[in-house]
Amino acid sequence: MKIFRSHVLICGGTGCTSNKSREVKNRLEEKLKEVKLDKEVQVVVTGCFGLCEVGPIMIVYPEGSFYSRMSVDKVDEIVEEHLLKGRIVEKYLFKEKAQVEHAEDHKSLKDIQFYSKQKRVVLRNCGLINPEDINEYIARDGYMALGKVLTEMTPQDVIQVMKDSNLRGRGGAGFPVGLKWSFAAPNKADQKYIICNADEGDPGAFMDRSVLEGDPHAVLEAMAIAGYAIGATKGFIYVRAEYPIAVHRLQIAIKQARDLGLLGKNIFNSGFDFDIETRLGAGAFVCGEETALMQSIEGNRGMARVKPPFPANKGLWGKPTVINNVETLANIPQIILKGPEWFKSFGTEKSPGTKIFALGGKVLNTGLVEVPMGTTLREVIYDIGGGCPGGKKFKAVQTGGPSGGCLTADHLDTPIDYENLAAVGSMMGSGGMIVMDEDNCMVDIARFFLDFIVDESCGKCTPCRVGTKRMLTILERITQGKGTLEDLDELESLANSIKNSSLCGLGQTAPNPVLATLRYFKDEYVAHVVDKKCPAKNCKALITYEIDKDKCTGCTLCARKCPVGCISGTVKNPHEIDQEKCIKCGNCYSVCRFGAVQKN
Image 1: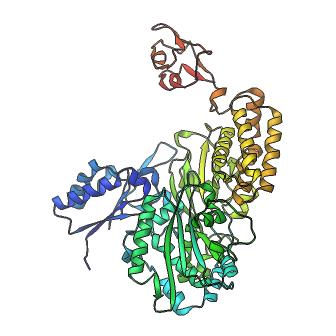
Image 2: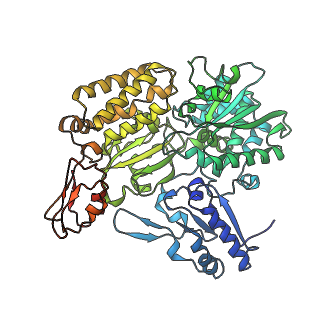
């Protein structure tokens, strides 16, 4: 086996790839050849490191030097100084900025606060191995769990381990995995199926995508284990077509596993057959719902159906089917290898293990975060995320995607688990976590999520199809300054009706953003309908721009940038905005260097 003196790991996830990490990798390999280090330094393209805010990321081992915001023009210097002469290039190391004016150099990943409170279980291989090389996964105990269950355990033993671990589905509902498997196992059928739900449609969510890009074999191994447990011989991974890197790496992983006999016929000479195919989703949010997903795999329009019967009894093509999402499955090999007690040693009693969140919005360190269940929102947003940038005041956090709820600063010490989030009016969901600051209008946030829900509703049931559209119309009227107090009562009434009568879970949770914002930010709704003002100065129809004549120097920049010519005045004299002509584009506010243009 070839021994290298240095390894350079470059993020090959979607975020870093979009920021030209491939070009960085190509230039790195060219430069290493130029200085004759290509036989001594190995370049490895990995999955996501998690700290997406500062990508592309490159880590040099054995030093562990954590270079951030890499670009092609930085490569030559790092090769010549660090890899050739052994001198770390300090100016390119990641600098962790806190809310105070302070920056600190970090030479390795373990020193970085972003990772300090994380526990990487599902993400343990992401950013560490080459996801397109099965040997690197095997070197990290890959497929040992599958070997163990096929040679040492009965299907009932496997199900019992999952029950003992109390692993709960990470797709949103939190249903116990072992219990779900136990429902499907005793059903007699000539064919059973395992489905991996990788149809990740929440705005701002990229947890499943990153796992598939960085550690695809963990999901394949888990699906085979699940197949053995319930007696299934066929698996499908339903993955979004908008995830080309994940799809590509899945296809490579499936072929490599087949070539080594880890998928296909008679795996480990056990007599167990199991194979996997991918199916591309067409981008419909509703296909994240399990019955709609199965409809799509069967070639039909993705629409939810009534339950019961549940998929464990009558699922794909009418056969017993178990559906788990990517994050859920990625936990399973380690639970088999390390035991249920290990898994329950972190997290909470009712929600053991870890949870991955896609931390985004108005937070300093956006990225992928994996923390033990029970970690508080404050720890995730401030200790890991670094708080709101620019000294802005934290206002709310949306958990659970468009079907979740907005929580306030009063909830920052809420432990993150299924029960606690539900108790305060939100939900775990698949793991999106969007942070908002003082500049966000909560009425407009509710409108945004309802707009998404209306657009993505499958339209099968009347409450979701008609009710959410009616709610959106009311919210649009309120943000335009045309709402009334009666609208607020109607919003709440509609929300509760939709929640109680929609066919599937997506429709039942669709009103959550409105209910949560009405509950915690009622004063903002009242300001919109009574005062005709948006407290956050965000809703365009309720904003006015005025010029403070005491601050205006008459530089004329605002007038020159106004697209409709509504600003008048002469050089070195105060200017004035014609409110009737103003289209509220905000150009004048953006370009004024003297703070003379006021946004009211």
